[in-house]
Length: 388
Ligand SMILES: C[S@@+](CC[C@H](N)C(=O)[O-])C[C@H]1O[C@@H](n2cnc3c(N)ncnc32)[C@H](O)[C@@H]1O
Image (tube, rainbow, N blue to C red; front, side, top):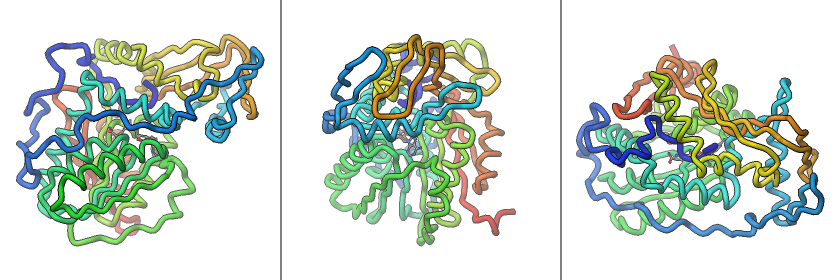
């Protein structure tokens, strides 16, 4: 799926023996922490939130090549069309972040993330719990970038054995921010003894202009932990990844920590094939096409999902089989043109450490999953003048 939960290599999704990994399967992860109470249950699976469905009404098609959006969808479509970039090689780049936009994008992502076959969700959570279990100080604040539905944060917050905590989330999808607000509010309501202050802010982490326009928060007495989970860093272009990390760096206090979960380059061809099989599943393909669906052109061609060896990336190309124009925008596609709608870069450990160092994060520690080509890295924020 383009922007949805990353399919898991090894296709454990279809392997009866590996639904949710058993405790300890993921390597040297300590048992559930002193600092985390084994209360569980908070923020667990629950009905999907309902979003206004006015954005999901089908387009009115008045002409074979011009798709007319209903009036309510126009603003979203204008915004999406403006984000589609024509590269010098003639391919359109449809940013993966667009797949989360609108009610449909949020709903599809949440449904896929809640699929019991999507084992990476619990596997990554287990690594994150291991990290929190080893912290020696109380956590003042968790700042999450791209929280999705807030499930992972709810599990962590629900188990922290302390009385005061701030949780702040940044996301480009207002609908996913709403879902995260709902999830974290439930935790606050259930954990009466926890003074949990919540804040949810709209931000495009790939926007370079948002880097300098923020004021770095000051340090508290305890730890501030930033989180960018679920392979979110793998979806933007190279430039977008740098902007994402710089935006995050600017929003964490000096010496604050960042936890970042990424998919690693698979070791062998078999794993690559299994990864592609997972991405080619019907539901995943539907998710990859959400942005084109919003633009009303998802039926005007065919999607191919391939592994690009040169860039270690799962790539989805949509090839148009007819000329088509998105009404009310300057965006049009010609027969034979391609649009890249899926970009899921796999990292080497060295590359991840280098990228974090280049964007102002130091003291990088990488915890690898024993079950999947997946890693959780922690790193500390160093302001430029203090960086060695
Ligand atoms: C793959 S989901 C991961 C969700 C959650 N962190 C998890 O691990 O389950 C990506 C999340 O990042 C958000 N996101 C993606 N690109 C973004 C961008 N450029 N700026 C802000 N948020 C973005 C999406 O809206 C979504 O909430």
